[in-house]
Structure formats: C-alpha cells, structure tokens
Image 1 (cartoon, rainbow, N blue to C red):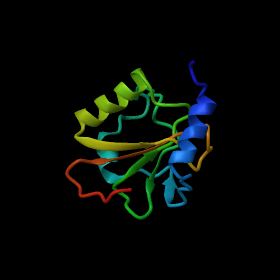
Image 2 (tube, rainbow, N blue to C red):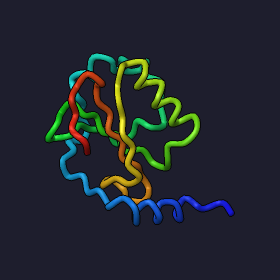
Image 3 (cartoon, rainbow, N blue to C red):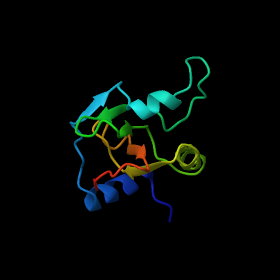
Image 4 (cartoon, helix red, strand yellow):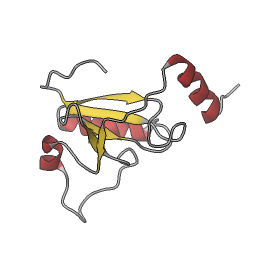
Length: 117
C-alpha cells in the first residue's frame, strides 16, 4: 500500500525530533554562494531553492526550505549542483518555515569542517 505524504511526514516526525531553526538569517546568503549565484534574469528556476538564508551560528552554511519533498529529478538537480560546486548537503524532513509543508536543506563547501548537525 502506498503511503500519503502526510503519513510519511508524520512517521518522520516521530523518528526525527522537530527542528525549530531559529538561527537562520533569511534572504542572506554565504559569501561562497554569492560568487556562484547566477546574475538576475539569467537564473534557471530550481524547485529546491526556496525560502533561503544562512545559519547565524555558521554563516558558511546555506539554508533552503522548499515546499514538498525532494525526490526524483529535484534531488538529482540538488546533487548535480553540489557536485558541480564541490558542496555537501543534508536534508531534514521538516523546517521552521512551514512545518509539514517544507523541508530543511543545509548546503556548505566540502573543504570546510562543518560540525554534525
């Protein structure tokens, strides 16, 4: 039997404690991202880049909180972006922006020693 998105989200919330991310500076991006960010008008819209910001405690970490879930081509697109620019990422099932509707993704340069989240 196929599970609904709500069932999967509810199960994930039981396993992963709800993350209230108060340490995000929205609409600000890390310096490394500003160097690769496409010029306005030239950017190709990507589904995973929504509600963006950077971590207050570690401004080298880009945070995006897209609606829905990252599956299939969306996840492949995120992986390709990270591979192209030598980045690592971590996906959390919920975000503070709109719990149960958005995911929380953290992205950072591979060469940085970023602590476990």
